[in-house]
Length: 483
Image (tube, rainbow, N blue to C red; front, top):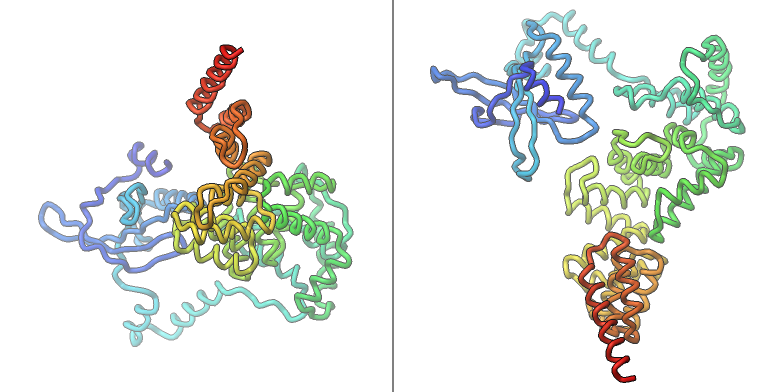
């Protein structure tokens, strides 16, 4: 939208994608791939350009806008790569996706390494040292042995490049206070502005705190975890929240409702819990942070947090719920491109680590693909472990003999249980059971009621309901004639 608006305003030139010939990849970055390509002008002369192709991920929008704003404000400068305009083209893998590329001046001297190697005899040592010093200034210090791990987590958060990823002064204060005095009461800091904070008091507190940091003996992660559990009620509360969430999630219950109810019943604040999670790097806390951002718990709707990166971070460290959500991100394209093969790999990782939710979703996938033997096995396992969402397709497997022998009664029982617990689509299938006497006695009035429930849930089954209504009226007419 930003780019299109600038094009309409005449501030950015748009190039046609077919103008660029001989495109060749020459590099890449955090959110882009760089190609070189030529344009042949009317005089048949070739000019080389660099094309910086931008990935279509929501969380990089601000970075792109900032980069374009900077380029437009500078215009042309001899020491800065020139910005000529943009071009857009269809993705080769998916024609429905339109990608943008920045058209830039092509710098043909190669990388700094190439430059130094090709000009080794021409560059003085003093200049080489300047290069080395400038590069070294980008390095970060290593933590001093014995430094509190939670303190390290706080100051590493403050190093993040993006402002939105760095904690506010209020969050830093709460994090430090949490380490010094784990029994502190929750602060209601959202109504406090930075200008209202007494910086001198903060400096005094910080000096006292720093004196305690380096006197603490090194602890293994396990020791820190046990110490926190024994003395920190906040950690105990959030560990309880995590266990409750995992239990309800694997049973197929509503995730946002589970978390919000648990926090509310314990008299806590969603935003305070999220800020606490923000300062933690243990896999389960990183995963829980991703859950909060994904369902806007303790944060505003429309936040641009990259939940995929959070889940991937925790999933790579064997956090089973995070592994499920990495698979889900790959399946539906949350903050990443859809990659079904990757989704299946991550679902299998989660299953191997005991995820009932992953068994259910993979069972549903195999059912959809008509791989009924695999589907039945996974759905049955998930159901036996308490997952209510597995009941619907498992009921259909029994009813229709898919992956197992036909068992109408078992199919009906599962569909009835699923419908009564509010599992989507189950009311419709249960209505059909009552209409056609599948696994139960025929009961058109009950069938009508379940079709009505399906309609109320948004399912399009007007014709089914009307068909049953006609049958009921015919039976009543027939009964009256007999009398």
